[in-house]
Length: 309
Image 1 (cartoon, rainbow, N blue to C red):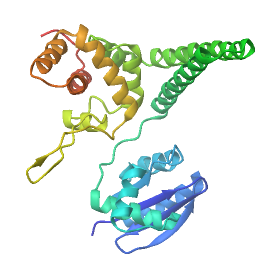
Image 2: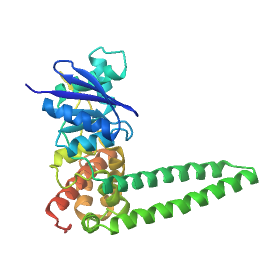
Image 3: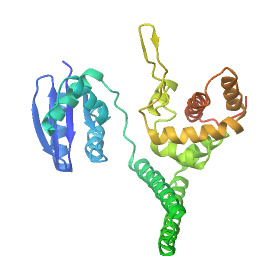
Image 4: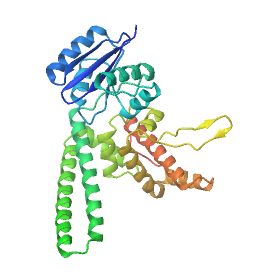
């Protein structure tokens, strides 16, 4: 019999539900509690153990369970909530959420993926911090453009200078992290061999899509949120759309596609053919981003730099 386990994660507690059977219990969300939970779950030999992504609270528990050989999947909270609504489950408590997660993983069977190692998570945190600083800089520069009072302008200018200095520091930390790892340095050089892919895009992919090079093209597109979803019913045919996946990776690839559509000979020709065929500009750019991702995935898989056809 296949056993599925759902775990609702909070700061201090892990609520557990076993499906089928409905067994429910909890453990403390600390190393000792997780160790005890792992021993109990090993006795059940579960097919899959699922935790919701909760802003990092799930990382330690998921990492310990994966290291112990359990098949762990970290699932999207929005998908679990939609699943609960489809079941008519309106009530929401930690034990109820654990039961919903268990039923979700039993029905959907999301693939378990190896968790990123500590160095990769550290790089991902730095890349995310860089993105946050850029957003703050953009907001402060907009406020400076609207400011009228001299004292307000001086305040904004001081903060902008401080953010720019912090951005330089974070960029230096990212550069040091990548350059201190021969594996990352090699991967960065391979990714940047493709015209249109710069340092920021390469490091975003290294940090936030470490699976790249180990996926097929469909898996890579789905993980980045670049796989088109078809909408149709009877004779009605709606427009396909993209979404879900890792938004930061998708944004980086979209920006790279703007450059690749101009400077990468193969992708430039591909983009021009789509435009000539009547495709909207945005649809053509998404297709370029998807093709670029397929190329980057193959380059890391084969460990060979890009070469023009």
